[in-house]
Amino acid sequence: MDTQRNESEDFMLELGAITKSFGKNTILHQVSLRVRKGEVCSIIGPSGAGKSTLLRCINLLEQPDSGNMSLNGNFYDVSFPLRQDELLSLRRTCGMVFQSFNLFPHMTVLQNVVFPQRHVLRRNESEAREVALKLLDRVGLKNKASSHPTQLSGGQQQRVAIARALALEPKLMLFDEPTSALDPELAHEVLDVMRELADSGMTMVVVTHEMNFARTVGDHLVVMADGHKIEEGIPEAIMDHPQQSRTRQFLSAVNH
Amino acid sequence: MEPLLVVLQGLPLTLIVSIGSFIVGAILAVPLSLGLRTSILPLRLICRLVVDLLRGVPMIVWLFVLKFGISSPEFRLTSLEAALLGLGTISAGYLAEIYRAGLQTVPRGQYEASQALGISRPIAFFRIIAPQAVRIVSPTIATYFIGLLKNSSIASTIIVAEMVFQAQAYARQNLSISGVLPYVFAGLLYIALSVPIAMASRSLDERLRKSVI
Ligand SMILES: Nc1ncnc2c1ncn2[C@@H]1O[C@H](COP(=O)(O)OP(=O)(O)O)[C@@H](O)[C@H]1O
Ligand SMILES: [Mg+2]
Image: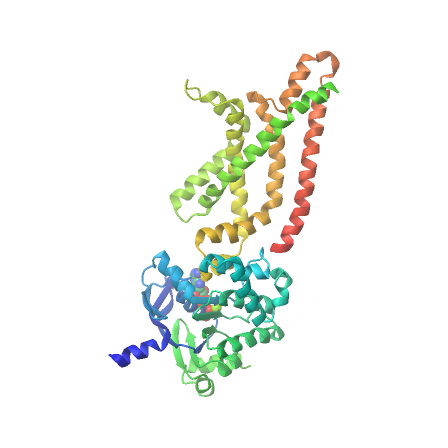
């Protein structure tokens, strides 16, 4: 009993049998996943495998058909839509970074980071600014605070998006292919920020095609195909000795 | 100069009718445009029907209905009220359609980022989505307003003493002088009002667009 509770306290996120379909197509088949506190979990797999959908089920941007979830010690039956207050508190626990950045183009960089703090955490303006400037400094963009997002490179925009999410003090960060829209030279500046975030102890779930990141920063690797979790384990072990033929196919495709 | 002075007396009502009915329309168009996009089918159909009716009815007919059609002894609209309500509701129909088009251009990612951050729906709509939509359609809104400014002259038919009404009255009383002169002045005043609006909207548009696209 005691050991069980301790064990479940080790986990930031536990997904239980998440199933999701769009119309007649089942996109996720009873996917379960456990992410320890402070762990970086990478999800890889071919396009269309359901990686984004799984990630979006975690913060309920997609409503699963059935399944359950435990996040930071709170249990949720996600077979039904949550109450609005539960939903907002769940989303407050997760930060999300999108492939397409999704900064607010009508606000400056600083406002992008300040605005959510004001409305979600109800921080006052000066406190929110202070937090924002500290985080912009952390991602190396304090000098761009008064620029508009469209004046920034993709890599810079993505770093602002990370700062915007961190400003709400999430317990878990979700990344959906954060570097896929970027040229390789710009991708590394984003990956550096993510590496630093991982080193600082943040729990992260990262959908990515960056095998090097998954191998060197990731603690746990999940391989998905056709809406199933087909393999998971220590990144080096899976990359060097994949057990499933689909994993082998996928790895040889990305490595060439 | 007398005909110009007479027409100028109509200027305040021209401005009141056009700006007033624009404001009425701009506000009523918010719920209508949301209704045009709702996933609740009956509500969407009703809003669609209302918008199409408002855009389909000739202004002059609608003004006559409001001014002379409602004639219960205890409730009757004044000419100005009928003009504001009539042109306001028709504007609501057009502006709802313009807003809807603008809202459609805001990328899904903007809604998703707001949701993921835990920003409540009303705040996301009014502070994140709507400002971007309005920036994109602001030239269309300015064009509509210029049209409305000129269409406010239709209010003369229900006895609102705006510029065209004044021109008409003067011309009728001074047939001998030059019947066309007051109309020429009225025309020049409309141009003097709309050209700066068009110019301002173009320069505003360039600045706003730079910060959205
Ligand atoms: N909103 C949606 N409506 C219908 N089908 C969708 C939707 N989102 C994703 N899908 C489908 O779900 C499958 C998995 O998509 P996704 O989770 O984006 O895969 P991945 O991120 O692994 O590339 C794809 O076949 C995609 O077409
Ligand atoms: Mg994806």
